[in-house]
Length: 250
Image (cartoon, rainbow, N blue to C red; front, side, top):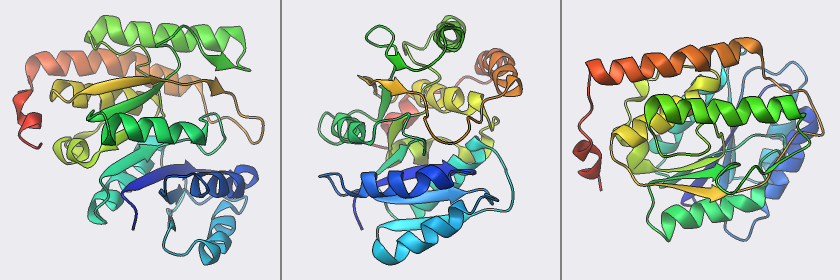
């Protein structure tokens, strides 16, 4: 077993599954991969099962019944990673919008530089997004601005979904009480880590929109995020978290 596990949730990613698995497992640092597939009707799970024979002990598959949401997929993966003793746990999309080579930089930020959470950031050095229409770039950029304004988190890309967590962060965050399942899940996990006092590093990346498969974004996901941020802030006033609790984990 390697020390880093890359979590890749999938739903109808047959076109990307084999390519992303082969790329991640070819990196110079040896990562393991866990695919969490929500019953993809296009046969994504079958593609991964075939590859498991080739990458025995490094490629794992958890298949769930039906589409249950991004947040629940990652929480399933977090629990699996902790149960199997991984020290560094990554979130990454299956569609190559996140460059797998950047896993090495996220890993170094935590394993070498001592950060607790490393975020692959589109906005820490300007706006680094390729192939998105301008309206979507503006929506994403100002969504992160809105999150910073409401929460006061010093994070430029608050909605980013490309991250490395140390196991101590995942042990400290109460996964049973993560409320959101869509876009807001990414914000809530950063918010919990920030509240608990963990060290967070934004690593600049270039985000490239998918060229294969179909985006899973919807208006409902953005609505959840908009109102969810307000609810998180209100809850933080009603139920403050003691930041030093996280530091005792280290």
